[in-house]
Each structure stands twice: as structure tokens, then as C-alpha cells.
Image (cartoon, rainbow, N blue to C red; front, side):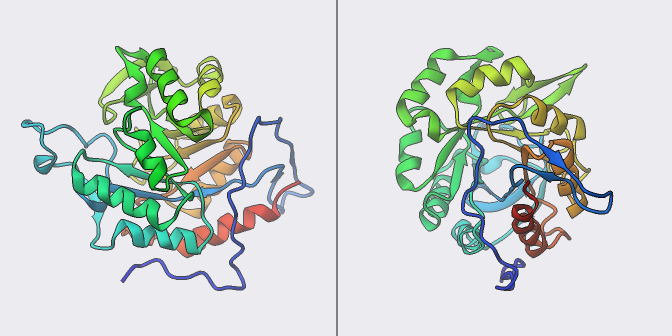
Length: 307
């Protein structure tokens, strides 16, 4: 049985895919120090379904590497959690609770993982985005299976730079409005640089105002994992969240290190109400201590905190 239980009907107020397009400057107000700051959009909880070797797992960021023989079967990443519960069951739970825009990430390149991803988007059509090894040749099959968007990183980066030709091909294939660029990054010096190929290869692409503004012309959203804290429940990379809130001209989701409702509030504040948040390993349904039900309630409450 899953550890995530139904939200009481009196508290459940499904969020039907509210998003922010062509973002206007965000306004923040607070009438007293005891009241939460209000912004002019609702920050959203973005759930995840990470799949490795056909099973739902939570893996420590940076430990997923190609095995010596190059086969998925012999990969040995550091696993926080895995379950017999199917990807489709998690998808149905998110659908039940009205949580749209979650991420299905294929962490290994095998048929069982692909089929599990397809099962998830079949179960919640239009409610989930899919990433992990996606190319211009494979993207439409995922969209046709029910994904709202495809998430792409490594395919559009080559030799440390954006491959403009491949990016244009993706936009032509699936459309800008169905493409999410994953700008997962690590800090080097004062810069956050995009890392690709299972977060093992550094690029020269900085997650900053210039880079995000240029890439925003070719996609609908950004997904940004703070790789240095991903899967470790170490807390939020607050500086990265501040930069995302300041620089991204389109919807952006931060993932990495969230472990409590206080961390969700930290993202809400540091990101100026402009950055959505993914929680993975900390949730009770993924073996953690943070109640999924409480995160759903937090998500629904955000709609009441709009100016």
C-alpha cells in the first residue's frame, strides 16, 4: 500500500494547471509580519516519478553513472528508496489530488523504464511531463502517449554549448509550448553551470539572465535541479532559487534538497513567488518523513495567497 493517503475532501482544492506565461513583474505584499507574504501567482508543488530499471526509485543526485559495460542492468547508483508500487499508481494519485505539471524522469535507458513512463502518462493524460534521454526522434511518441511536455537536457547540448540545430529541430517537432528545458546545474566559482549526461558533464552554459532569456525563446518552461543537493535532503540551494526567481522570464521549477514545509516556504520567498518546487526523497510516499498530504494542502493554500 502507498504511504500517501487521500487528502480530506474539505481541504482538497485541486489546482487545475495554473501557470504563468509571458511573465509580468511579480508583486509582493504583506499587511503584517504575522501574515504570509502574498504574490500575484500561486507557487505550485510539482510532483515527480523517477524511474530506474522499470521501477519507481529515488536516487542520490550525481551517483547515477554509466556502468563499465554500458548496460542499465549493471548500474549501481545510490538509492534512497524504491517501491513495488507502479508508476501509474503514483500518476493516478497526482491526478486524484489535482496536482498537474509533475515530472516523470527516465533514469535508465531500457525498455522497462520507457514502458513505465508511458504507463504513467497514460494514467494521467496531459498532467505529467516526461524527460530522460529524450530526442527529436522520440519526443512525439511520449506526447502521443499522454505527456503534456517533454523535458530535454543532454540532447540540446554538445561540446559544452547549446546545439542550436538540435534545439530548433525539437521545437519544430513538438512545438515550443510542449518543450521543457532542464537546466540542472552545479556551482563553479560564482556561476551555476548546466551539467548534462546524468549530471556528469559540465557545460559552459550559465544559468543567468542572458542564458535564460535566450533559451526561453525556444521552450515553455525550465526545470532546474540543484545537483549539489539533489536527493540528499540537505535543504534548499537558496542562492540558486533567488537567481531563478530573478532571471527566468518563463515558468521555472526548482528541485533539490527540499525536506520540510519550511523549505517550501523558503523557495516561495527566495524565488519571489515565481519559482515552483519539486519534493522527492523527503516525502513519506518515497520513504521520507514529510507527509505528502501536508504538501498537497500547502499547494492548495497557495491559491489563497494571491494578491
